[in-house]
Each structure stands twice: as structure tokens, then as C-alpha cells.
Amino acid sequence: MKRIIGYLLMCFITYPLSAQFNSEEVQREMNEGTLAGFGTSQVKDTYLSPFNYSGWGARILNERMSLLRRMNFFRQQIISVDISSTQNPAENVNDFGAFVDYSLTYYYRIRTGNNFSLLPGASAHLMGGFIYNTRNGNNPLSAKVDIDLGLSVIMLYTFRIKKYPLTLRYQADIPLGGIFFSPPYGISYYEMFNEGNRSEIIAFNSFHNKLALKNYATVDIPVHGSTLRLGYLSSLYYSDTNQIDTRILSNTFMIGWVKKFVLR
Image (cartoon, rainbow, N blue to C red; front, side, top):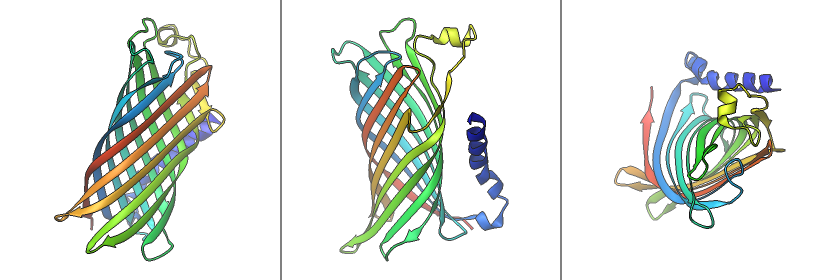
């Protein structure tokens, strides 16, 4: 099963590279948005501590949405960097987290009206990062690496307030299955990488042991020839395997600018 998942991921990720040589897949139009945001974060990782930690989180996100020559097909690429600082209930121990996410998604647009569009799609997702606990001595760090295939959907609605066009968007992403790094409880990183105790550190994931759901809502507002984007991103990550319970929840309010390119 792991070999099948790995093969599918390789095919999905390398497809855009080969498509560059296919004249039918040349991009015609691209929107790029860069946003920064701040919000709340909650972290629990029983490899480090049995307690829930809460605090603040910050995120930088870059999104590229390309219209392909086949008119109703879009390609979206999102890269985001997420950092957080949280404390235990007694407020005497900190967790510091840092994660990098990359997702590649292909959508097909279904027009359901003059102002509304529905875009279902399939995605590949890669995430890597860590949680660092300031109290632990032997095992102060918990690393996270995930590779998933999943589904995504975007809903777009355009309307006007007087002469100003506004675009509302809602996007939801959920993984179906993949592989991720999850060492057994009680095994230190020294044992894994210095003594070669690497059994069961890679696990297959699906709904039975992992749930990762993202909700992303934005509004685009024209401002003096540019486009201002306001957004809200809710990210839920939950996994339970090898006797390790991990929960990461963040709510981030974001602001940034969108640029439009026409590629011939």
C-alpha cells in the first residue's frame, strides 16, 4: 500500500513538469496572492506532554491560481509557513512550533450561474515541521512529515456594492490517504537515527488515524487598480497512531495583495 501511495504521489506531482511540454496545458492567466496573518493556536502532542498548550500563531501564505488553456481547468499552488508559541495550563512551559505546507491542486470549474462558480478538485499535499518543548531534556522535539492525496472544493461568488466588484471565496481541503512520520511512543530520536531503531516510524494514514481539515475564506476588494485580499484560515490537524495523540488547531486572520498576470 505504501508503494502504491508513493507511486501515485510521484505521478501527481511530476505531471505539471511534463505538461509544460504540452501546448494544450500552457497557462493563459495567473493570479498570485501573498498574505500574512496572526491568530490563535492550540497544540497537544503526547510524545512531548499530555497537556493542551494554547497561545498565538502567525502565518505567511503565497497562492498561485492558473487558468489553463483548457478553459475550465485551473491549477492552484499554495505555500505557507506557520509558526506558533503556546503555553501549558500552568503557564510555566512553552511549546514552539514551525511548519511549512505545500499543496498542488487541479480544479474543474462548474458554472452554476452568472455570479457563482463551483470548483471541485484533487490535490497532493506535503507538510513538514516540528514542535519543540522547553522542559523536556531527552526528547524535546517532535518532528512531523506528511504526504497526502486528497480532495478540495472552491466556491466563488461575485457581486457589486455600487460600482465596486467584490469576490467571495470559500475553500475546503481534506486528505484521503497518504503516509506520515510517526515514531512509537517512548522511542527517542537518538535511538531512531543513531542506533537504527526505525521500525514502525512510517505509517499509512487515512480517516482511521488522521484528520486534517482546512477552511479558507477570502474576499477580494479592488483598491486603486490593485486588489486587497482579506482572509480567514482555520486549520485542524489530528492524528492518533503508535500511542501518540497529536492535535494542532489554528485560527488565523489574514491580509494581503493579489496580482494578475497574463501569459502568452
